Length: 244
Image 1 (spheres, rainbow, N blue to C red):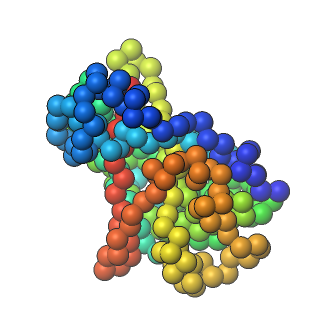
Image 2: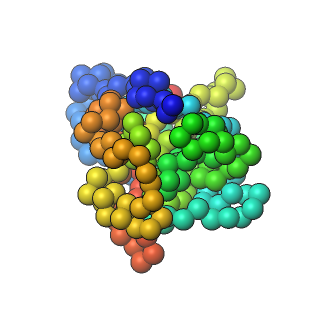
Image 3: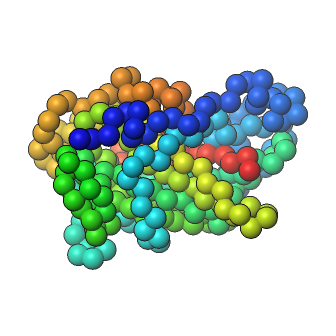
């Protein structure tokens, strides 16, 4: 039985209130976001206001250092689906400044076009143990960027379309801290993409849409990508700032 919303990805974070934001910045006014790799006084990056969400049951620390995560590395078999170029811009907020955060480890994992995760066991898709498709990590560069080539994820019963991600950073005391959450998608674009052959064989009940997914509701709309069309697929960027 597929994990329900309550078991699968229970929200564990929340969005900062304006008062909390101002407290973080020492009472400074809230203005526009700063770009990774730059700093600005009295600026709160839009990427700071992101809630954490639980990682769910399918995270496996594969330690796969790769940008293109579409294939299973043991067979080089490429997962079919609409190509998606996904770039994270990770920033660090310190006092009232924002700057690109280098050497952060960004892990990404999600289901394939038919709703199956690699290296997992579930009654709805059986066992995929030993496979590693649609998983991987990248280390951010000096500007805080980490780039991935993947596909638009499919869906499975009980969840809206989403991508999981985890950002791990080394603290000054040597301990590793992590931020875990999920990315969501525009429903109209998903409707178009799921008419493609790679996705059209998905069976079972209709997919859950964002507005009825309790995990999406916990995101406050702050984790929804805005992909653009490219010559061969789609491209999306995601800005996120870490305060510790």
